Amino acid sequence: MKTTIFTIALIALLTLGSCNSEPTLQKYFVENTENKDFIALDISPNILNLEKTKLSAEQTEAVNSFEKMNILAFKANDKNQAQFETERTKVNAILKNPKYEQLMKFGSGKDGASVSYVGSEDNIKEFVVFVNRKETGFAVVRVLGEDMNPNNIMTLMSVLQKSKIDMAQLKPLEQLIKK
Image (cartoon, rainbow, N blue to C red; front, side, top):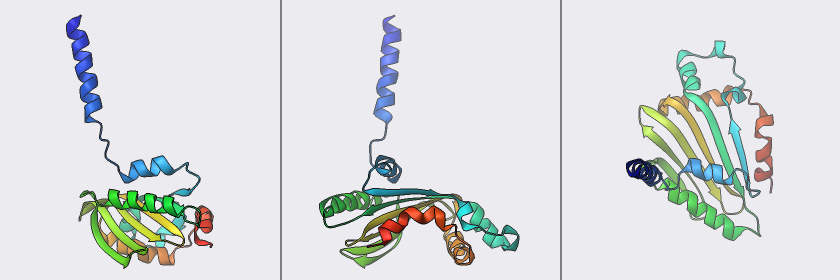
């Protein structure tokens, strides 16, 4: 009996001890999805409204590597600047984790953007675009997929320009853009 209780206690302790409590973008998204100060969207590949028969093999590969996109945006205003700074600091801290490999960063102080990825150069699991502007807020975009690579992302961008994007899926972002 004592051995059974000891074993159960040990397993429980190991299970609780192995839980990772460090912040991640996924946790940040989950924590803020229902927050009234944020706009959260999950976008599937069907937003592109593509005629797949007209795509090249390279374009088809790029589109097939893309599984979904998560967008979380914070709309800043005169009344929530302190919260904006707090939330922006949280996202920056998460993106400093070595698992997020930064590809590029541009802008300065109050305005800026960065592009990072998770995975290896040949097998990217997640691209992260973080854009912030003190006057309007910030947005974090997670592009999730399998076997993505920088070429796929560039090809996907060119496909986006030719697509007939379903703007209804992006309607919630209008309030962030309007000022």
